[in-house]
Image 1 (cartoon, rainbow, N blue to C red):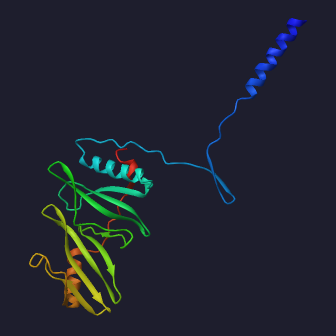
Image 2 (cartoon, helix red, strand yellow; image 1 turned 90 degrees about the vertical axis):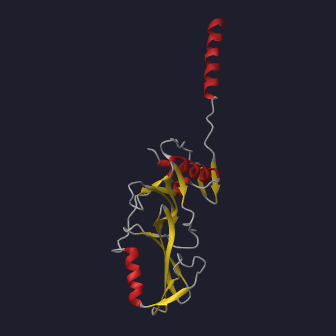
Image 3 (tube, rainbow, N blue to C red; image 1 turned 45 degrees about the vertical axis):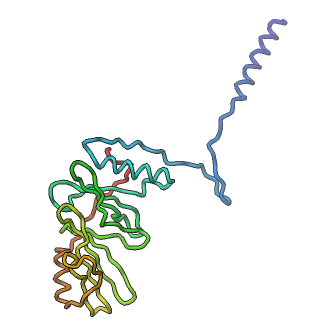
Length: 222
C-alpha cells in the first residue's frame, strides 16, 4: 500500500511539473487602446558578384537604409538602357508622394559601377522626374509666375544636364544659355513659342513616358 501511494505521488509531481511550463509571449506594444505585436523587417543578405558591378551598389544602399532604420522596401531599382548602347544602366528609385521616382543613376565604366553625379534629386523638393522613350530624363520646377523643365541625357558615357526651358505667365518662353559655349552662365534668354516647342519635342520625342518595372532593393538577384 505504501509503495502504491509513493508511485501515485510521483505521477502527480511529474504532472504538476509539466503544467508549470510557460511560453514567453511575443513582445507587444500598446498605443492608446491598440495592442499589437512588435515586428521588425528581417534583413536579407544581398549577394555580390564580381561579374555584376551593380550588385555592390545595391548592397551598399540596402545596408545603409536598413542600418539607419529606413525600411529598405521603400527603395527600388530597375535596369534600363538609357543611352541605348546595349548595356543597362541601374536606376534607383524611392517612393515620392506621386509614386516611385528616380533619384540616382549608375552606369558601367571600365568594369565598375559609376554614379552619374550631375543627376541628383531630392524627393522632398521636386516632383518625380519623367523618363521619355527618347532616353531623356526631365524634372519639373515651379516658380511664382511660371514653371519649367530641366533635361538630362547621356553624352559620351555621362548623364549630363542638357537644357532648361521655362514659361512665365503662359506667354514668355525662355531657355538656358548653351552650356557648351558658356558653362558658367545660368541665365535664361527669351525665345519664341515655336522655338520652345521645337526644343521640347527634340528632348521628349513623341512625349511617351516609360513605365518602369520597379522592384524593391531586397529582391535584387532573385
